[in-house]
Length: 179
Image 1: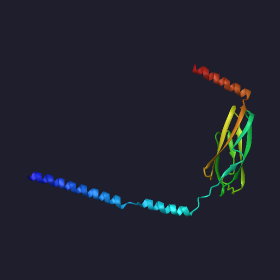
Image 2: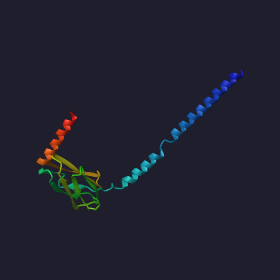
Image 3: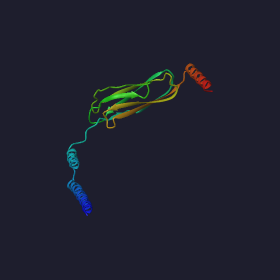
Image 4: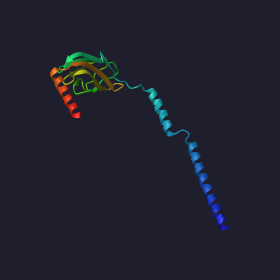
């Protein structure tokens, strides 16, 4: 008999604990109908609505691609890309990099360019050891909306006959080693 009472007491205690837990959980769920993060988001959206969007610089180029045509291997050729800041704030070019060591841009680094003002990027291409069709890019990092602008150059490089014979002989030697 004592054993039966003890068992009922444990069951009663377990039910009571479960009910307290469920009640606490439901109270916290109902009480937090609108969380603090939602309130903060509402406040920010009303503040942002009163402020205008930040102004960006924008680059407009006279051309974004240049074809050097046919050149001889070993020649270094250059072209100038002219751009205008068509944005609402000063344009600042932080970096400009060629896709290869043979492509070198010269640009106004960290120099503010006022809205409406123009600037130039001089791109040099060294065709040494670059026979046949070559296509290279220059990637510009600036304070524009996208943060990056891309310029392209291409050239058909006529191989130097002496260097081409050396390349062909080296290729034949590699093929002989692989057999």
